[in-house]
Length: 452
Image (cartoon, rainbow, N blue to C red):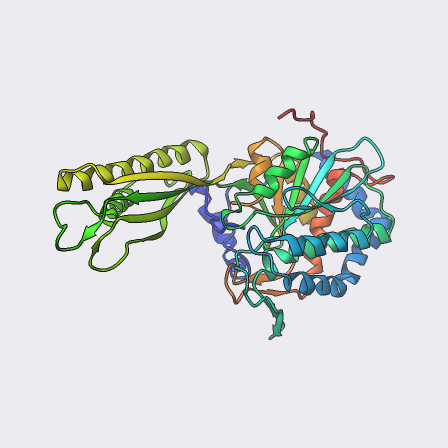
């Protein structure tokens, strides 16, 4: 998950404070909208029926009973490297586990996602349930799981292998207990969530499966957190080119690519952005030059731009592009030449969006949380849910259970003690949305099949 959780509304500072106690055990999830004071009667009734049904009680007990076994899946998958664009081996292992647990049609699609469909009993909705396969860590990283002080340590173990293992546990207990959902469940271990993966896995899923009616994704998060906002981002790589020359002999005759880039960076640093909706920028990486005594013939930098709304995102992008061009003009003018040039390449485009707080998918999560005594906090971040949100498809991200920390660091960890509780609550959310044969009707509405 891209770690940029931030308040959307300044008036919600008190709500953010409520989360402080749990922030240490997960990424900095911050409130972005008021939690519904109450859910619709139909939502409340569906979850009342589910919680009163003996079959569901048995199913939730099975999640707890399967917890220890699911940790073996967690360890096994974590110890298979899955760097960005190199998720193949983990995808293969994931498909093998899905098939072993009853999804005979599980496969790796043309983008590299691990996909399997568990059919429902009738003309119900299709719900995507997912977790991402990739991690931020490069090939060769030590991914051996180590246990100490009651925690499991390994790069990627919580973000997002825990989500992958919970999905497998759900699949096992649903099949073992012969639970028939009314709607279809599309199980997906997707690629391309981290780094410059650019959400390619999710973009492909929603292009290939145009009949998806909603999404519930799993990411490391405190119990009760429900992500409803997808922060959009645009990323650029800029390349500066100049003739170059000796630092002494050519001085005054040629511009410097690095100096021109420096002028551009200074102008970018002075850009003003709104606090609400939160809009940010940073020059994340720089490089170039050949030696200390050379007027640089080349330089490059990468810029990240983010916002909780599209209009300020695009406005800030325009300012960044202008700042770079102005820096080049200034450097050329300094020496009376026009030989410094710059080109740019869009290397990241994560669309943004939001799921309404009063939508049925959010109220379902709120009601499921309350069934387990969890207070709900509606939050925002940049995740796989950005894609369906940008398409107007209801989507949320919830936690899979367990306390987590150290994201994107070699010291990443998870404490799975009582982690089954989060897995139960999230599964209950899913069951209410797709309905259970003979117990409850689906809350999630079928949508017209998209044509684009």
